[in-house]
Length: 78
Image 1 (cartoon, rainbow, N blue to C red):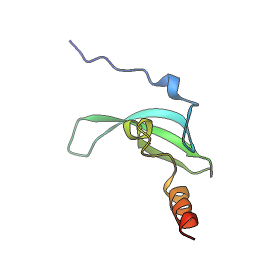
Image 2 (cartoon, helix red, strand yellow):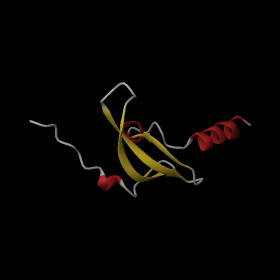
Image 3 (cartoon, helix red, strand yellow):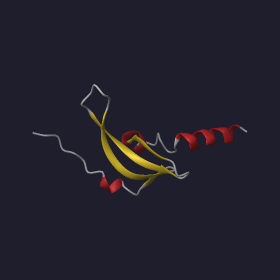
Image 4 (tube, rainbow, N blue to C red):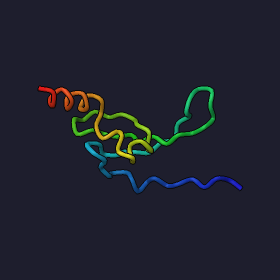
């Protein structure tokens, strides 16, 4: 029996924090591993596009891209 694969198409277009999910892809965890992880291709409100682990995004860990997160931290320290 094979493992059931979830369909994450319903997430495309949804917003989590400052990021909009453009696509959900599977990638190998590392070069030596065959374990696949799900990644979300996201666009931040600043326009930057990057990939983050889907699990972390849905748990609220990656609400902003690194540039926006850094500028948010810098702005609150002033």
